[in-house]
Image (cartoon, rainbow, N blue to C red):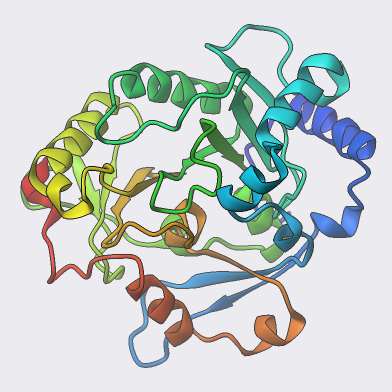
Length: 307
């Protein structure tokens, strides 16, 4: 019997399929082809390329949303509130969030936690509620089997005016492929400053991996980053990503504040592409070049000093 990587609870997946049917999402929109790319010259960190054309139909910028005076996350929240088939978690009230299907899933099971009323996404400048929210979502992940991912304004967040967390199921993709890649496959070793935080020797970009229970450590680190690097980003908060894997929570820092760029899934090794041609041709070097646009190299900044 082949190894099963997915952790998503069957009850949640069944509700997801009912919501997908209501939404009219075709099965081929969440059953993508996946392949691994690696470097022959420098074996180590490998990326997973995910061919999913439907994913690229989603809203891509806050500017477009403002033009239509219509927030897609507000609509999704309202839809889940008014139609129980679109609400994935009905057993309990979860902070001010509602849980619903991602209408443009990369992989089967992709979902969103969206605040019922629109409020801006947290930044490293306004981080007061992050500890309680992250603590909740870590526990929520244990109960449901979702993996929690979060982008920030300036680093992957396409709708920064409305707080939301990505509830991912990349592990379902591992089941399709039959193996792991990226963050989940990479070797982790203790960082020099403390054995409680890890790094990936094969990943050439600055990052830290926290134990998932170390919510205080994550918040403390982001607060310290803001104190030391905040001025670089012109008083907008330090752009960063949160990506959950089997071995903990990956944190990366954006080297520029970008209105539109790749995010928490990409830095963890999951690279969605739109066309079959790109899927066939993209190389490991191409992936590294894309990461170079958004992440500091290890030799550029040592994130351990902010622990």
